Image (cartoon, rainbow, N blue to C red):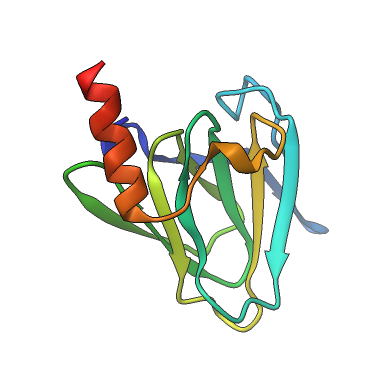
Length: 137
C-alpha cells in the first residue's frame, strides 16, 4: 500500500445554538464496515508503532491533538489531527506512529477488523521485510 491512499476524511457535522453534532456512518462516511471501536487517552508514550496486515483504520482526535506519522516503503508523511470533524484514513500495510499528544488528547479509532495480534508488524524492519516478501510473490 502507498501513502497516496492515506487521506483526511471530513466528518459530517451540524452546528446550532446547542453546539456541534458529528456523526459517522459505515460505508458512507467511513470507507469500510466498522468491526471495532477503541480510544486511547492519558497517553504517556508513543502509540501505534506498527502496521496492520489486513486492517483499515480511521483515527479521530475527539479531544486535544496529536501527530500521526505514516510510512510506506518509500516515504513518510505527518498529519496533525486536532479537529473532531476530521479523521485520518490509514489503510492496511501502512506503518503508523502517533506522537506529540496534547495533555487532553483522546484518539478514537474505528477499524474494519477485530483485534488480532498476528496481524501486527511491530517494527519498521519487520514491516519493510514483509512488504519486500509480498513484492517477491
